[in-house]
Image (cartoon, rainbow, N blue to C red; front, side, top):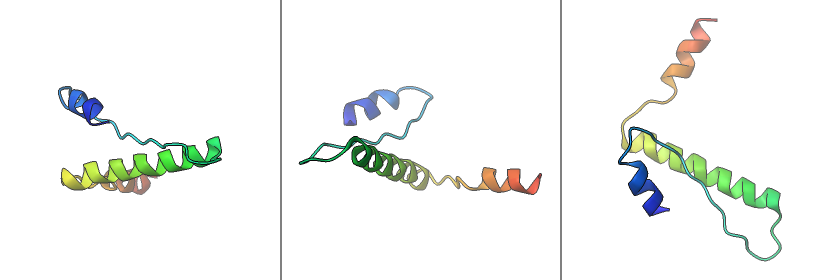
Length: 65
């Protein structure tokens, strides 16, 4: 995971990444929920660590409706 992020940092692009490791008899659905949660944590970390207010664009669209 760190290698992917290091390579991505060399580009003008960003990506939030989530993953899950199967344990016992976990279903695909359970794995996808864990990976999705990890992705959102990664996304939140990016915004917080870069001082970006991610909700301001959403609020602007709502006020234009």
